[in-house]
Length: 349
Ligand SMILES: NC(=O)c1ccc[n+]([C@@H]2O[C@H](COP(=O)([O-])OP(=O)(O)OC[C@H]3O[C@@H](n4cnc5c(N)ncnc54)[C@H](O)[C@@H]3O)[C@@H](O)[C@H]2O)c1
Image (tube, rainbow, N blue to C red; front, side):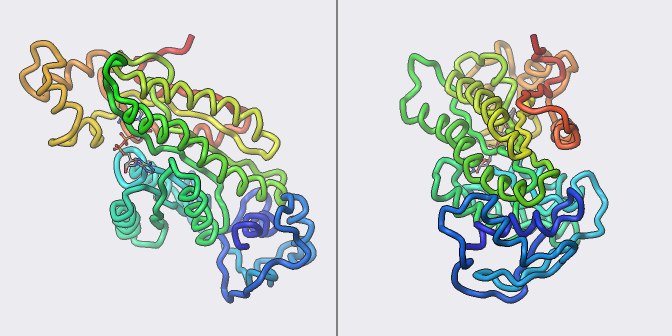
């Protein structure tokens, strides 16, 4: 029941267009009377409105209990936003979550690597010296897992203002030899996973919008330069990322009615992240040992080869990506875009 009404309660307790974090201070059981199981967002809001007078910061919600809204006094570019980041146990996802938390957000880190994401959230809280993050289990390729995780986010904080669809995998191979199992693996995480997450998250955002019509919410997919330009012997990945841009544009057209902006960020290679730099499994080691870079004798040679492909001469970093994230969140007149962050390696036509 919580997930069905909590985002609307948040919207009804908003201060202007700023939605609070919610907590249940004493729980009730049962359903919200008078609401059919398939109630529309506007019906849910109208049923709740008499229970929540303007300016209220606490209310008794049948089926939920006594609910309290709170705003923190934190400063920052993401102050008081509730953010969900997938694939956040490591790499870009973890660093994006860390930056959002440092900028004042409440952050839910979601990952299929449950131990990893719980440790990552605990590390964020320790580093910040205050509670700001929780970790939840989520397999983005499994609809039930996604729904369960989104319910956990709503139960913990009340709703979602910013969803960062970051979980992604890569299995590079020739089209002539790639197994169907590997193609399915990449497609299921990168393409289907993005769809399933937006399916669950957009319903939370629609409820918030019905209760607080002037607020805007954001969905940002961490796509890739390979979503804008083909990638040799990496078709399953590039195809899944091109597909992600098709989804982004389509979601943007549909969800604008709920004040949800949907955009993609297309980073260049993140050489300092585990995908490239893991000393055992990283792409630098793989490319060195398989002789993919002609004449390369060391990891530094492989890295220099790839850096030379970038007009700005270096790989992409999380601060580069965060500038794009905050631009897209701050910008109230753009949706459906794929924003390159590639140091000039990919230029839009
Ligand atoms: N690393 C790069 O050079 C690069 C460049 C451009 C775009 N990207 C994109 O950035 C995103 C993050 O990449 P990264 O390099 O940080 O990756 P990474 O491999 O370091 O981390 C990916 C995370 O996603 C998680 N994950 C995998 N499958 C999952 C699933 N089914 N459900 C939930 N979580 C799952 C993993 O456990 C891991 O924690 C991806 O979408 C990737 O395509 C990466």
